[in-house]
Image (cartoon, rainbow, N blue to C red):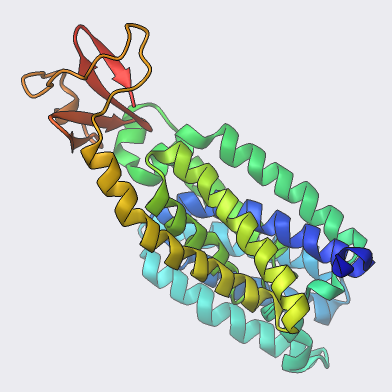
Length: 329
């Protein structure tokens, strides 16, 4: 392909694929916390970091990372202490970040034009140093989001239940917003600070239409993000459009396709007998309606009707009674 022979497009494609992989990984926990607009708020704080970099003559990426992390931690601490609600904290991020960023960029003589490459992305300007920074920070984010997955999921879904399990809820909540802040800033060259939230949220929504269970949806979202990044980057090269916007449009297109596919998939799951490979052979699951294992009375436990029996969902796992034992679903 022609674009692979161009060094700047090689860097652009790698940066876009890394962003497409990392953004949905942390976005999964953001969506579970019902803070889908957090990425937008953090993007506006990162604008302040870019403006500060223009004013001080420092590199935009590390300055934006530090500024965004500090802002995210401050708002999360305010939320935890009850000083401000989540909505109020996001409003502070939105307006304070973009206003101060534009002001500092203007003082530095850059103006709005100097910020545009960071607001909407500019893959063609990704340097080798930027690519290394995106790669290293991206790997760290993936290690933490996958390695701490069960704990982060428990905190994002039900904080009270996570406390009962002995999980350090406040610390992990801080970790989630810090990882989100880093994800936003490393993606400002690829998707842009105003559009990165879409890449954090839309692939998650797409994956949840197609996959059952947290693990399937988590890795499915990463796959959707990579596919959207690939389609958007290649498409923008051939139609001469903004790369960040094209990536987001591609992710929305994949979401639309998932809506069309999700209905038949659900009907197929509902009508096919739930029989799987089993150490005792293909044995149909027995009814669980008379079973009382106490799960239904535990905080954070969901009870889901599944054919002629019920499944219990807790701690990121889904299981149902099967004779004298349980099957993990």
